[in-house]
Image 1 (tube, helix red, strand yellow):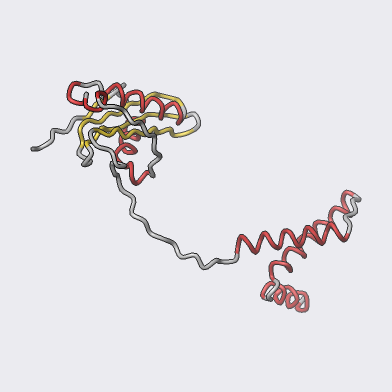
Image 2: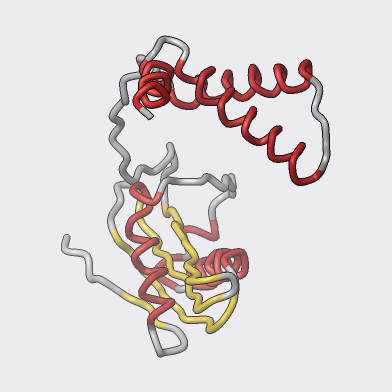
Length: 190
């Protein structure tokens, strides 16, 4: 008992711990294949499996000297001027209760108009596409025509959730909103 425990302890704590653990595991597996399925695995195949698996474990578990970098994520106009449409879809499940939301901002980030809608049971792609569609429909509003009358340079840009927090929040409101469609207007103070 103590001899086996010491042998295992030395193998696990030693410099070749990954090789040791993988070798014990693969030898046990090959022994079970021989006893239960009468299947013989060659020494070469066993050695290759042990070496490959040990290398994979080293790659996964050995810590690299990578220090995490912090980056600030916030909404930005992506170099645009005039009006900017931000949208997001939300689906709780595949398919699941879904909705979308979005807002139109000026190039300084000021809120112009927002919207949210519940679409019932659907999927995320449907919610995202409807968000774009209803954003463009909202842009046809008399106070927002600036978005549609310009020479368009359309760019679809993925933004992290933190940089699109307002649209993400509105999409979640849309998914949980029993009303069919809601627009949200905030009066801008001059």
